[in-house]
Image 1 (cartoon, rainbow, N blue to C red):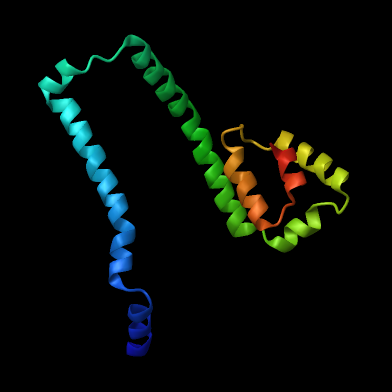
Image 2: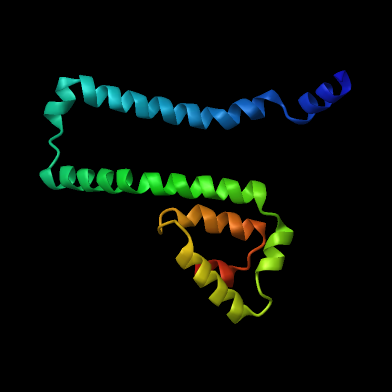
Length: 141
């Protein structure tokens, strides 16, 4: 047990692990400081005047994001089910060898699939990783 731990610690230096997370931590700190300054500092609020068109853009962006998020989460959930229960052998058995037939079959499956264009992206990505050819995967979209 000690030999395995020594091997892991020797191969992955601690500084490399810390350096990998340092960028993430720094970004989070910078965003938190910016939000704090814009929220609680009255002098910054008086200095920067945000035009109404930018506020309108912000509202539209957030509304689209909030509307699409549940569908993306459903797609990620379905992709997780595919990862666990569908094997590469199932994919090879279900996809026809003929490219045209594979595209037609994937178009039919894509029409029956309970996901919108937001949720289908993680599903198609997982299927491609599992071995679905690209020409058949595009039919699902």
